[in-house]
Amino acid sequence: MGRRIDLNWDEWNPGLDTDEMTIAGVLATLPAAEPQDVPEIIRRYENPESPEALPGAISLPRHDCIHVLLGRGLHVQDEAFVIGATMGAASDITDEAIDTFIRVSTTEYPKHWRFEEAHIASFRLGVGFSIDNLPGRNLHLIPFEQEPWQSMPVREARKTLGIVKEELRAYFRMAEMYVPGTRASRRLDTSAHRDDVRIGHRETD
Image 1 (cartoon, helix red, strand yellow):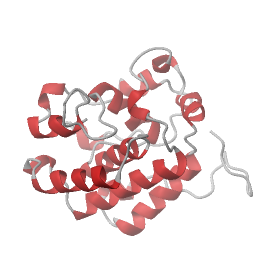
Image 2 (tube, helix red, strand yellow):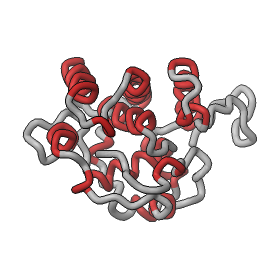
Image 3 (spheres, helix red, strand yellow):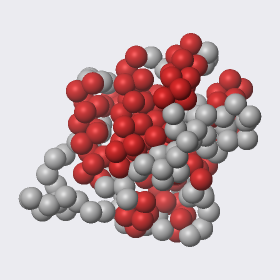
Image 4 (cartoon, helix red, strand yellow):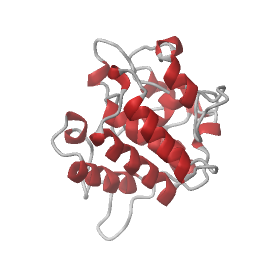
């Protein structure tokens, strides 16, 4: 896992209107980054090959795919939600693991990567989203960076996984309340009613 250091990293935001694009197509717009850009302390807890990896630890290419599926950008607040959602979907998630991540991300991570109070709120929302909607789905074990996932339209991938956009929007609306005024919160798609949602029915893809 990890955040990008790139001239336009803060502008990248796939959002939820990528239904007809393939996962690979959305990833092609992502600012470049290399796994070695991620500090050692972060790799210790977030790299699946580390003996100290926490539940949901995932490779960077696979992590990028989850950004696409959840419609989140690269701000630290976005990263917190994506990491939280990945951990929350792990079948071996525990309160102790959540507490450990919060401790190390707020005290041990380097300054540029360190989580603050607002980021922890977003992290907890991500955990809650997956516990409520994707329990035990183990997103970190699904090879999204490979075929057939890469050629799959985002709509189909979300439907296969059980990711419902209106449920995501509900959590995005909570982010607006818990973490108001930030750029990451302001650009979230929180529309309660859209053309592709019939009144009285939940969106199913």
